[in-house]
Image 1: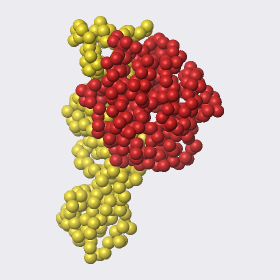
Image 2 (image 1 turned 135 degrees about the vertical axis):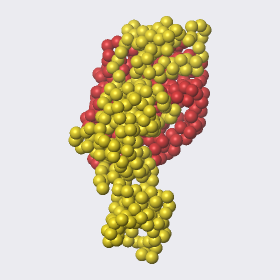
Image 3 (image 1 turned 90 degrees about the horizontal axis):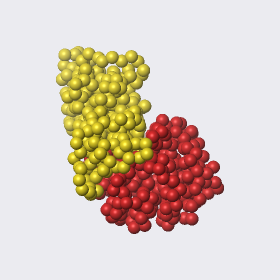
Image 4 (image 1 turned 45 degrees about the horizontal axis):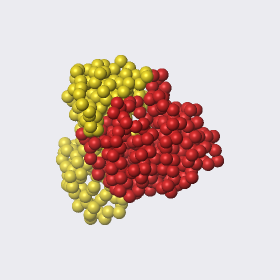
Length: 276
Length: 307
């Protein structure tokens, strides 16, 4: 099933990390696509953009942001949005994504993906802001389900319902991170299949997989190490419901060689089969 | 004059959506003062202010709410209390920003030691919270901050931080073509005196009370390091292509570059250099002036000649 936004199936990609720049540019490995962290290439005129230009000349690129702060009660940062748009045009990014979260309030940026209360008030607020961002970008925004460690007493609906209603009302795309579904399911005690059953898969334009760290009392979305088997199994379930959707591996700490990282990403083929 | 490459420092803060785990998990979240919120329902903005205040409270200090108040906003899980759940975000907030400062200041961390650097970073984070979407310039106050902090050698720490920050600035400065000796050959002899030079836009000249560059270089080469005695030095930090350079400057070169950077003609700039060398024999002055100029050009300090 193609997604309703007609965004392409880019295949199996990797999060672009600085420690891999040299390896990529020297050897030009056969990678389907790269996802960049948008903020790494904002507020700079120098070397980060030089690297990005070279890599974007060789591979399809998608932008993944961490500072849109779509759920914040601060006004949308128009300067940030302008910079995001300029970066998209420069890198010819196929689409732009960020997270269902807020990162700060009263002008302060915590640079963390903070959880929202899942209430009607928050839903209406985020719907309006997603629409405004999409109008500004002139393109659909893909929102990712976050990993979370806290739930609000004020919640009136589960995250999956909030996400599904948000996507419908704002007419936005979704980036489904199956590792985040798994992490949150353990931290909050729900069945991850219940989450997947509520997702409007025709809006899913990308999957994320990543490693996590189990502390016994809770799981942290650390992006360290290989993807766990339960997460690969969730990807298999999700991908069956949306077979034309690209998959991306995030590995952000204790990053191994490019080859090892790429090998881990390509394990996705075992779980999504010929559709890759 | 030593020209050293800083090729190992990519200087890019690896932002990611992961939750960093620098700090050891401490599930003994400290209890704080009486809750500010005990009655009624909070709107979204009030909830966010409340949450943000707790998350950004320095680690080691009690959270500004107690467990009972925290539970009014955040539910406990089967394994963690409300405050412990919020504390995961507090640790993540500080860990991410400490990692950012470590990216910018690895040699300062080496000089101070990990524990002292982390303590300094926590105070920095409290003093200079981020207000920007990008972390590229989050560490910009560190040199000034070091001078005001109770460090063993605050002057040396500040000089070292200023040098490391100059490297970050060179990384993010606009990329520009630089001229070389071959470009000089295109200039007709009669036009030399009036020639003006635009300096490489990434160039910064640091004047330090301590030989911070020698310390940094020893660290990079894996040689033993110790806090040096004060000794004034000048260092140019700049970028050509993807490479960052640190060039220790003699006073003649400082004079020439700073003069040309202000828009002086080559004739005027070289006259300033000559004035510095007035006590030396004439043939030595000519040799040094020529060397000084050629060295500055061949090092990539200039990006354009205008006639």
